[in-house]
Length: 158
Length: 153
Image 1 (tube, rainbow over the protein chains, first blue to last red):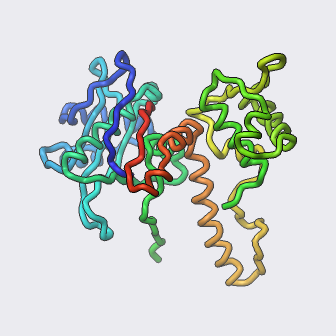
Image 2 (image 1 turned 135 degrees about the horizontal axis):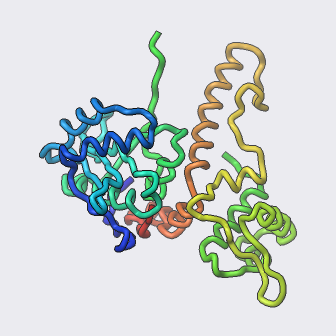
């Protein structure tokens, strides 16, 4: 989708604070992911923080926080020339605390990472997810995302 | 992908009514706007009311109004009320002789079906109303960026 300028329609009273992730957030991120997916992946999330939680100017690991509680997080990166694609923002993880959903947190995180991508000079944002993941698929569509010009293909190795 | 006439009428009506849930519209108003058969639309509206997506109000100023949850109701939810829509699997109606070519063709057609189903399942009425509001078809024709309505999730 084109990264057009957006206005987040978020209830001011319910708005979370969006900020870059800190090392101290990692245990909450691991717990949130385990709550959503039912599978604890502590090493994976520690690695993700090492890779995306630093000061690399084209990598973004943002969290939504409200009243000292982690409501959600989003991770993305501006990548160039993969699959022949010009520089483009990629979102490859977003999680919202189940009890915090439908309160604008996902929209806040989405808008924040789009703003971060915009500062790197890209005009498109892309993501990829399982067809069966209807909730997240619906979320990204509600943000204006539609099918893009690429098709994902895969095969099983013998 | 081609939807049956009743399904299209249902989607027209649902989107028209969901655009303003406080408003009641007579079947004739919807039929006139979309240039469709009032008789056919009336039957579709009855089915939508039975599914508790819309409700009818009688008397002067009566009509139909949207009572569903636009953030939860998907295109698939509406479509399924009017036509079977599912991946063919092993029992589809495509020509499928028991040959390697027949099976291979079915694999490809199923891939297309699965993408269509995922699309219908993931687009809510709320999202459709945003697409209507943004009018991306006009932007594509003029080269302008589509308008973006604020979203809340």
